[in-house]
Image (cartoon, rainbow, N blue to C red; front, side, top):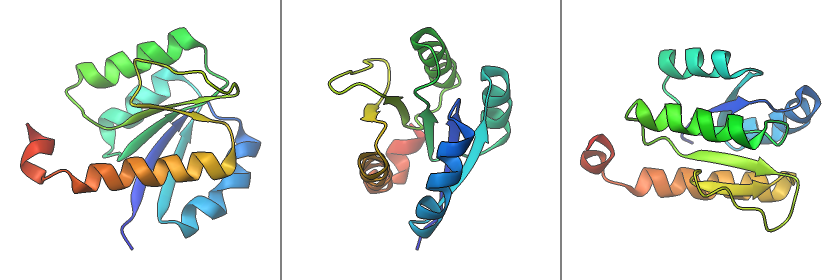
Length: 124
């Protein structure tokens, strides 16, 4: 089973604790941070397969962090988590509802999609 490393930004600590065992059993390692500065520092130092932007973040902060990730040249998928059904953040790769089952399914789909891209295309 491949391990997927996820940077989770601004997520409520209780939600992470509740999801942690489910994510681990599915092959995810989640690094949680609670500020944009910490997210940038971790992103620069790490090799993440996915970035989750929590529902507790403002739209402006989600967009700003997504822009900074893209400006770094990274094609790591960025997912915005929303409490509202039908909300879509166009600056992100995906918007997922803050529902444990939907969130895990969306993470699996994005991870699978990324692993299907040939390595030469991921570098380009």
